[in-house]
Image (cartoon, rainbow, N blue to C red; front, side, top):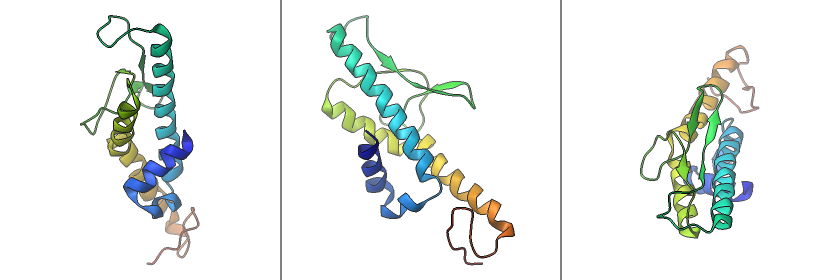
Length: 135
């Protein structure tokens, strides 16, 4: 799960993303929501209920800092609330695309980069993540 998410992040943001201060948190978030979707998919399979049934397994990730439930939405940068589990492998591919295109993942990567370098003001040559800073 984590390896698939890592590959998707690298494919989307480039190979240098793995060295970014925000990469670890983005990878954790991506793997967490993917795992939640897989768990919902597994439950859905056990229920043996089709897409049109009233009973469906859903998933989401509770964000403690905002007290909201987040799920990436296919075709949208933001997402809130619960989502129905993907129904097949193609659904998981779409979910992977939605995760890496989500505003949440992008903001984690951006915020970690900027907060990291904001903390580095007292270190003129090296940031807290060990990256060289040209000033």
